[in-house]
Every structure is written in structure tokens, then in C-alpha cells.
Length: 85
Ligand SMILES: [Zn+2]
Image (cartoon, rainbow, N blue to C red; front, side, top):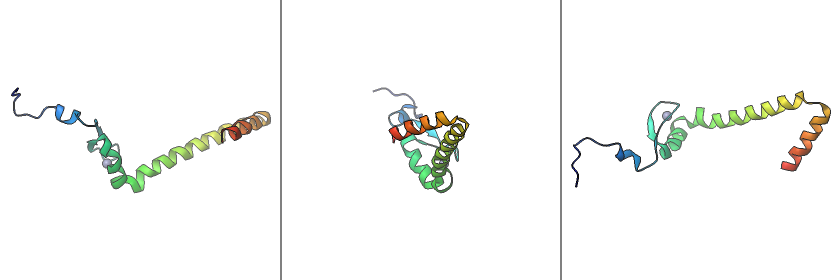
């Protein structure tokens, strides 16, 4: 039995998921807990909107690139996209 003082060691937190900082409010949470915290505390405004925004941006980027293509390349892209769907 080691007696390593009364202070709490880091080991107390490393047995579980790593501690991460909420990028919205700056509070620290267990990583596993962070997503539910975000959903509960920030879900309405930031978090769920973020995913949608990211995806919307991706679509926007794809469309922008697509519009820069020649007609030939466009139909090629369409064919390939169709084969992915
Ligand atoms: Zn937060």
C-alpha cells in the first residue's frame, strides 16, 4: 500500500475517457459526457446546427466546383455520382 499524500492524482481521471473542453462554453467534461452536455446545453443553437452547416458548406463547395467544370466534365461527374448513390 503506497501512501502518496492526500492530493488527488491525475490517475483519477485517466481511468475513464479523456477530459475534453467544451468548445462552446469552455467547461471541461469527460469525453463521453461532452456530447450529451452539448446536446443538452448547446444542442438547440450550436451543435446540431454545426453539423448541418458543415454539410451545407460541403454541398455548396461541391456545387461551386461543379459549376466551374466543362460540360464534358460535368456529365462525367454526374455519372460518377450516380454510380455512388
Ligand atoms: Zn458547453
